[in-house]
Amino acid sequence: MPFARRTAALAAALGCLAATVAPAAAGAAPRPGPETPSALLLTVEGGADDMRATLLVCGPAGGLHPDPATACRLVARVDGHLDALDVRPGPCTREYAPVTARAVGFWQDRPVTYTRTFDNRCELRRGTDALFDF
Image (cartoon, rainbow, N blue to C red; front, side, top):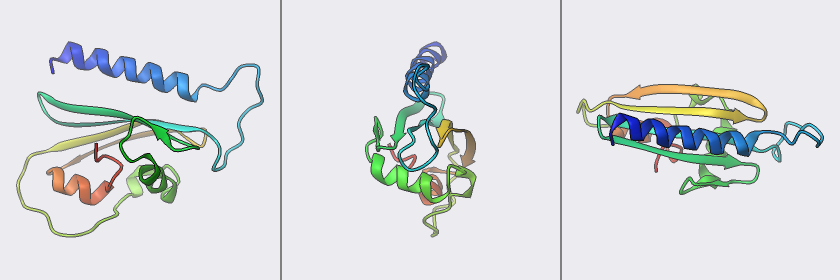
């Protein structure tokens, strides 16, 4: 996907994310807890023309992610600190085909920003399980 189209798609997704997590101006402030809506824009980029994005909403689980319940449980397990994810240890090939995973949004009213580059897709799956599997 050309850079301009990729940027436009991300801008649209960020707009959806902002609308999802923005608290209602007239309503009461949300209380942190399992029912507090949380939303993350997740992207995976593996090369010049290989970029995927999805929206994960938790509390309740939903959004565009193919397995939101599992992904929300993974994020809850590390309380939104995605750098702490390392869920499926095991061997991977030594192939070097870098893949960058990114997340931006809010978890329990706290901002989340995550970027990590893995050596290949196997290491991405091993390190993040279903979260970036879309």
